[in-house]
Image (cartoon, rainbow, N blue to C red; front, top):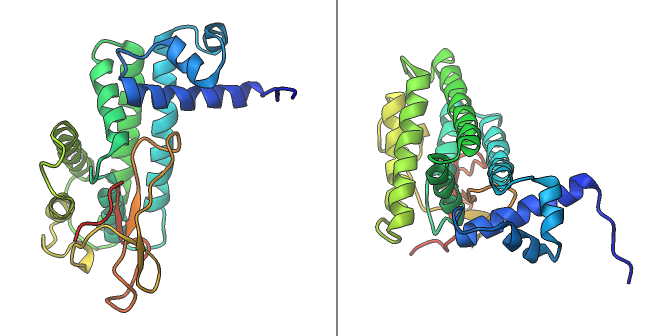
Length: 259
């Protein structure tokens, strides 16, 4: 059977996906060019043709995966809804709920960037985009009179710093906090930044992370590796329990909902 010849863009995509998987499995320090080549059944030379060093490959893989997250964030923040609801959806999705394999990749990237200037530049650029996207929607909410926030940029920094810190703790010490606790804390952090009652940011009571695909049907949803480094699930209560808003409840989780 003749082998299908891939375009340069398709081959590069394959290499980046394989690199993400290998970094998640082995870590940035341990992963080798040969690991990526072996995963695809290609030669080391082919990998090095597209990425001349391991450092270039790692930086490109991290950027490739993180861009998927940014696309998801833009989708959540760009919905037709109030700023509060869009922000809550984004914060709940960002929160480190579940056994987040994607969070391990981010943490690996942060650690490696201390010694890798190229990766540090990539990670810093992506981090700035995250904060800027959140700050823009916070500013929109202030302008619309939904809440008061004297410094949207500072609020975005505090929110992401809080959630990043939770991610490090819960990834390093699995099971240390329940999903319900993580989501409650994420909701409370957002409410504090927006000057809203902590119990009901956006006018809703925090609940478990679920997606309702039909009446009474609840399933967890997870993004594929390579689409984004963080994971995603949409949260709603069963139809009839309250008004369902697709933009309201999101949390990155890859474990089934708790009792």
